[in-house]
Image (cartoon, rainbow, N blue to C red; front, side, top):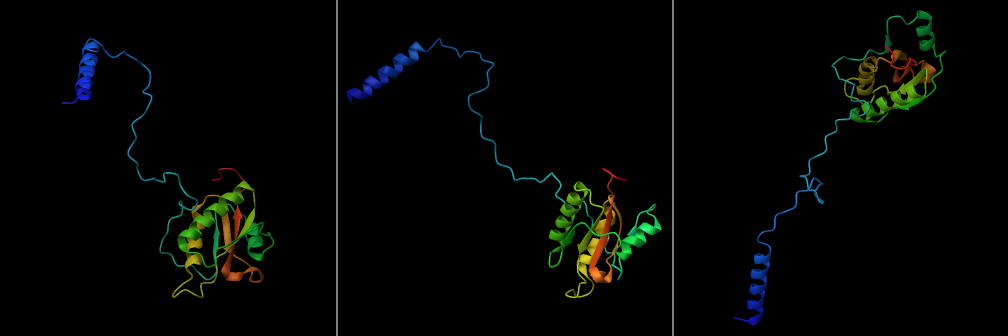
Length: 176
């Protein structure tokens, strides 16, 4: 055996003998390091804009019309004729359904924050669809699901006709 190995063993034996009666100190401090936690996949608990919209199998009519109870006839006629001018426009042309859902949710949220009274949503006439206009159908389903939407209808012919909708929004915070 090498003399270096013997001196290491002697040192180790001496150290162990010296530390034989030593006890760890009791501390109420946090450890200076934390064990790493196992990575978990992200869960999106927070709702994304548009997540509140549910899909149904309703077909969209040629002319869109919706109004909540209590909306005056004259106000709804003004909306249909374009007397109430839209203050902002959202164009959903060429979007996929999920993208359009999120865009519509964000647009409505922004319009409500900006206290807009009337907005225009261009959904298209669906001439590229096999059966019926997909986005028009979905917009017709989604808009009544938001309580801030008081009424909507197809836009006048000079402003998009059956390919766009005028939406009347509530200006009251947390309406309905």
